[in-house]
Length: 161
Image 1 (cartoon, rainbow, N blue to C red):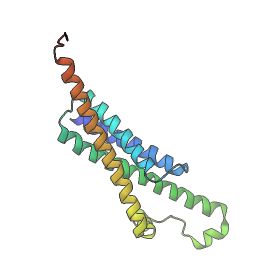
Image 2 (tube, helix red, strand yellow):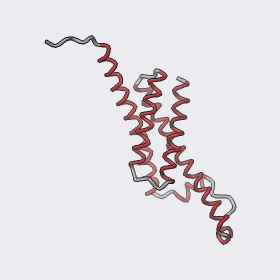
Image 3 (cartoon, rainbow, N blue to C red):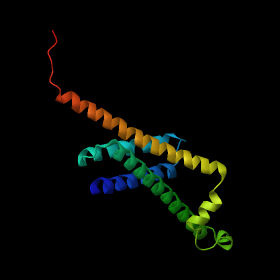
Image 4 (tube, rainbow, N blue to C red):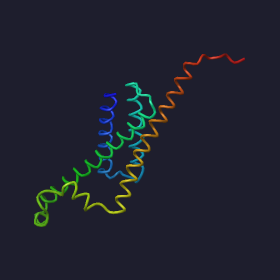
C-alpha cells in the first residue's frame, strides 16, 4: 500500500505540474484541460494500481480523489510560483514599477485574498471537481474493464455448434 500512495502522490504532482504548464503556455480551454488532467491521472493510477495489486474499488476511489487533489494543489502552486516570477521580472525591467510594488510578491494568502472573486472561486471549484470526477471515473471504469477481461479469460471456452 505504501508504494500505491507514494506513486500516486508522485503521479498527481507530475500531472499537476503538466496542467500548470498547459495553463502557462496559454493552452487552457475551460474544462478541457481539467478533463484531460483527470483522464490522464486516472489512467496512470489504474496502471499503478494494477502494478501494485490494488483492486478494492473503495480504495481506488479514495486514492484517486486524494491524488487528484494533490494534482490540483501542485497545479495552483506552480501557477503561484509563476506569478512570483512575473512579479520579480516586472520590478527588474521597469524601474517605475519598483516604486509602487514591494520587493517581495504577495504571500500565498495575500495572493488568494486579492485574486479571489465569486467567478474565479466558482471556476477553481469546477476545475477541481472535473479533475477529481474524471480521475475517479477513469480509475473505476478501467478497473471494471480489467476485471471483466480477467473473468472472461478464466472462463473455459465452450465451442458453439
